[in-house]
Amino acid sequence: MVKRDPSTLSALDFKALISPTSPAKFFKTHWGRRHLTAKLAPRFRAALAAELCIDDIEKLFSHSKKTMAWFESLEGDYHSMDVPSARNALDLYMAGMTLYLADMATPLIMEWHQRLAAEIGHSGQRITFSVFAARRSGRTRCHYDNLENFTIQLRGSKTWKLAPNRFLPVPLHNWVTGMPPNSEQLRYARGTLPKTIPSMHKKVVLEPGDVLYIPRGYLHEVDASEDSISLFVAFQCHPWASFVTDRLFAHFVQDERWRENAVAEWKGSYQQDGAQARLAILLKQFKEVVAKLKVSDLIDD
Ligand SMILES: [Fe+2]
Image (cartoon, rainbow, N blue to C red; front, side, top):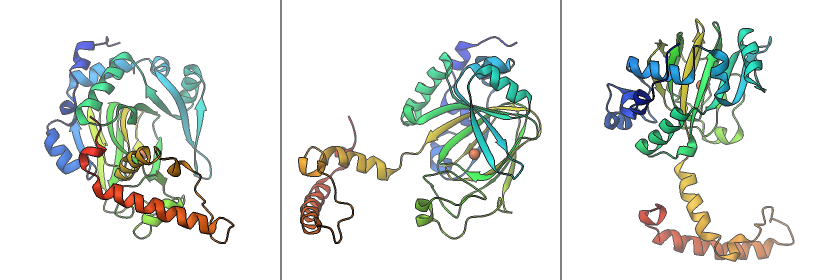
């Protein structure tokens, strides 16, 4: 078994993850736009493999704060279940199930987590480190996720089919083919969602040490031709709409009129006149505040 290598893992920075592409080029060309394949230096791959104990599956499973088993029913539907212990996870893995190990929390991974958040200016609370442990023949149907994410292949190989999402760019929710999108997604969908991965997809085979970045919403389908272990670094979305309205919320709730209960179903109700008058006052105040807002008012020191 390979020994832990703290000094190497402490040197793993964002540049090493996307090499040979530079961070400036990555954020201009790829982040949120198009996928990228990169190669992690062998010493970093070995250090990650040792830190996560991929040679000792039960130990690997013990690093996860929450483990889930994913499986497909005879009808072709996907299901997941929480797995209470690393021992149970090992039994399910041996029986052929794909395990999703959420929130990997070794000391060096937690250090890297903080470093990565600072390097790319993303909230550390919205970054997650997980592991997919898939048995050979494990596959996922065409879907998209609402996460910017990197897959670092640590063992085995996986074949990805990728296609940009022209139907519903920058989604706020996940979606898998065969399931209806939720009502919010339908409001901003452009046309009909596909039933399978589009024929113009790109095929990428990940081998140990390979890194794949895919933007939020990218359509993808994944097949494990052999037992596979990959580290999944995901960046949860935080849309500008939330960024701005969260700050406006913090401002307005200082005024008690904004803290009163909104009359949601006011048409035809006893409260209709009062609600309309109150809303007119609040809206006037809202416009006055927003008209004076500067970028610096919305950015924390
Ligand atoms: Fe996915």
